[in-house]
Length: 254
Image 1 (cartoon, rainbow, N blue to C red):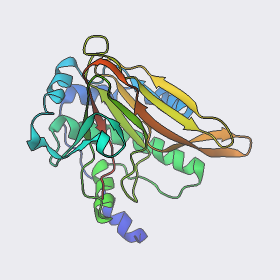
Image 2: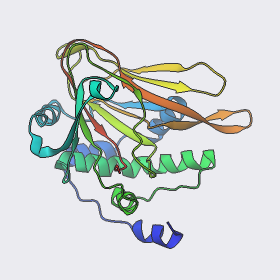
Image 3: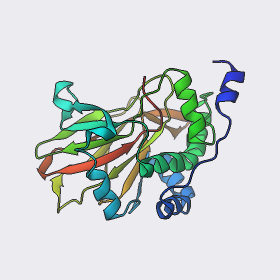
Image 4: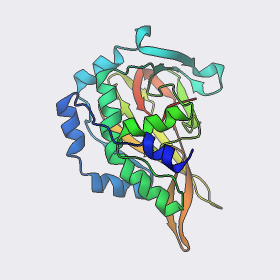
């Protein structure tokens, strides 16, 4: 794609306001602290991003096929055990707001990471502009998803890559309450540094908590400057109950 074409696609849009209390919560987060934690560990937890009623409302969408474009049963593809559904456009207003508002604060972090790694790609200020870039490349299928796990289910370590254009950060929000709705089912990440064994990170989440984390890699400081650390994420085996999570991926899929 030419530089002129990218510039045209990246023209800034106005972001519509939805769910103002949650939007204000995002806007008033300590983003420098979030950025610092992401730099150090590749994951940052935002407590109580969504209220219990918002979590219950999103969980309740799972059985309404009208909201989704496809359903994936993990065992059929070797992804683990459990299932998830990709939302269709238009997204529910809460998810649309989350995608747009979170992106605006994560894009500067993503641009700084790419600069540190010597990657030329830069991300526009608004999510609408970034989505135009995705759609121009044929990535037109929405990727926000709702995941459902039952006793014995788990999600294998993976990376959510869907095409040429990949935004390097994503968000997962736990919609169920640990200890009440389920046991087990921890959100886990691994990082692989060159010539080192993998490191495991467990991100403890309560209902409504959001984990912001690297999609596939992040920069780390070395003796010769920044280098690339590969990241994967998954969910450990549920011991009992049911667990729902909403995933917010900022790039669309081919």
